[in-house]
Image 1: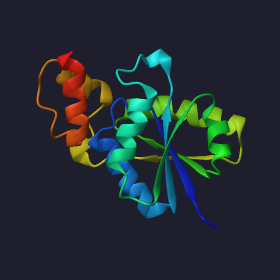
Image 2 (image 1 turned 135 degrees about the horizontal axis):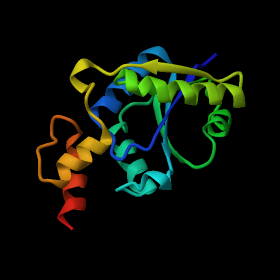
Image 3 (image 1 turned 90 degrees about the vertical axis):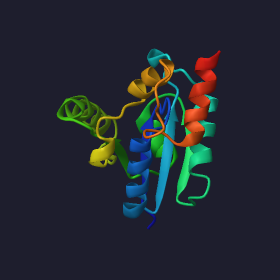
Image 4 (image 1 turned 180 degrees about the vertical axis):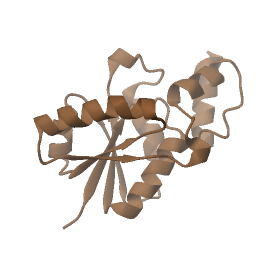
Length: 160
């Protein structure tokens, strides 16, 4: 049986921390679906289509990775894509409290869907998309935190 994990997030933008988790998930699962969430409450810098395209471009050479945009409940999206588990990244203890609540709600909504937590490499443990956006908006060097294509996209957004 093929094991599929769903890695959901807004990925606004995708960072090297996200990429690290995807690469490690590929060692544990046959297929990794990156679910790019439409979440207007977060007021994303990039549209859903732009975020999906960026993530697809980054993982274009990895046959284990599939990228899909989605709206609605995560558990419904997971079921539609035959995912056995949801992957979430934890950078700090403060992340765990929120993620623990989400995992329990998801378990309540679908008892067959497991939640797994991975920590990023230490060198990426302090990176967040919002911090990357802020540094980029102020003209800082973000090359250590994102793929060059993402860096270019951020520079173009903030040049406007």
